Image: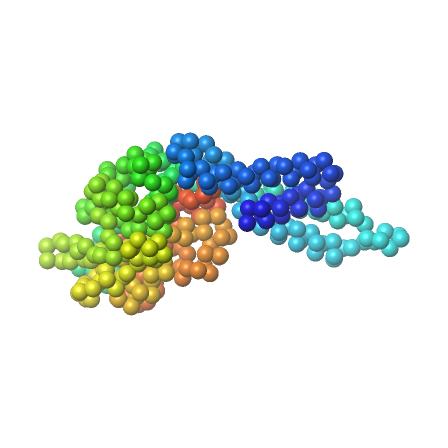
Length: 375
């Protein structure tokens, strides 16, 4: 994939635009080096300590974002250029089509694509590095006991603490969450990209989260890439309640509200005895009691509706992170972003993420801290 995308960029920018042999060779060397940088960035976070990996990861992932933006723009503008040549073909007096017009259009469309990608990348980096926005929503839960009406749940997800996100970012998120005085904090997976020894100090601020009923966590797919069991043990040492296909019942006087949590949808693929199992999590539960489900991927929604759960909080999709990739996410997930009423009884909120994965960019999909009030 790296070779194919960089080969396509070379073709559109250096070959089709009629540049000379020297420029084409230099372009090939440049793009070969940038492709190698991408590979090195992905490898660095696996083999180097975080502080060293960051020096490689930042430029590598910024370039990854540029590729993600540039390739579609080159494809669209290139197609538009070819159509324009076909519609306005003007042969020379000898009947041969004018190659100068074709080259001019190729250069123009490549320049437009490059400037568009650069502008979108700059906007995307600025958005990613800004404070996650506060997004406040109200979710109607008809069966909610009177004692729990107005319950404020703060959801964080897909922080991806790793080579480009560290302690300072997470400490600021914790400070802002505590200022909201929530009743419950829910972290719905993909917290980390790296091992406990490498990232523990960067995740430690989560131990300072304060809420009435505490902080709840469920695993995402990236926890399994990073060693789920050690991370679960570490988070529990910070006082965070990790739900692994189980539930916890909140109590206010005689009123009860279930908080249900599952392992990630794909956890079973890792063969360590873990795995998504909502049936086990709700076994023996009073079906008339209102319930909140924490599960990393929206693909759990049909199971949640089958069990009559009221509110489902998910992440995983990043809302596409870089527009228009949300449309591709829709091919594999039932919901991509925002609050949806799945059935008369079951709502789902798909959080766009509090951090980012890969490119430190968010194009038209800002990061957020979600404040969900049950009413």
